[in-house]
Length: 328
Ligand code: HEM
Image (cartoon, rainbow, N blue to C red; front, side, top):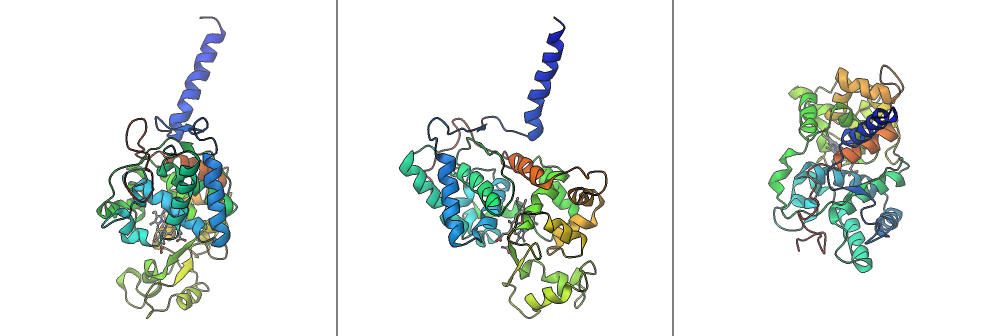
């Protein structure tokens, strides 16, 4: 070996180690459609933009759609299927209703341009990125080449994290899918946009730890009456509250600042601040502590790429659906 070879070998090893570090799945690539449907990404972007102009509430729903697709049977579009007892009909997915027509519209436009080429699972992944960009988050490169699955069952959604999960359960759910504690905090940082129904956190206002009448002492005392007003005790729980108080339409750091101010909304959000290891990541994004160099906008894209690899179907597996809401 000449003196350059070991250096090149080391560089090669580092370079090849870099993709598994991001958790890139076999079979996905950047620009997968560049030869057989070169306009694919632009068509999705334009579709999301058109719908966003009419109703900006679609952005958080598209982001959550990708998360709920990936966590249940992998990122293979099973969440999009219509029918009895499909994933779409499961309770955690009911509030995503506005997102489905966006994906169906993008698919129709893509079929007109290049029929049978672009998977619904990829449309979901691309639309999530476009939704973040439209709410002023940083873009990232979406790896594509996913294919669509052939199974969709409401029952399978039991694996989705609940807002009442302990921090240990949250960590376990994510690590079972190859996502570490930093990914957990970073991805839940997606709560910087969008809303929740009162029913998912009113226990914190009126019945904390089943103590009938007590509120969660972690809630800032000036903030509590505001939440109580929006979510009255005798209400039906369907009112909606922004997950990131004061900045629910903008993809920014404010969600993490709110965690530090006693202004978390969900129990599961508050848990990120209460636990030392997750709090260290939150603090890092706020510029404090040992992880102070972390940049949320950049890490969010990295963690989304990792999440986008979960259980993907590639090569000859799965299908390219003709219509996203039904199997071929
Ligand atoms: C421990 C994990 C998580 C829990 C327990 C959780 C829980 C929830 C709950 C209860 C809601 C309100 C649902 C509704 O009322 O419609 C919600 C909304 C939302 N979640 Fe999460 N989530 C988690 C992780 C994530 C991740 C990983 C992302 C994205 C990468 C995400 C993005 C969103 C967004 C954008 C919304 C707002 C949706 C809307 O405006 O309709 N969440 N989440």
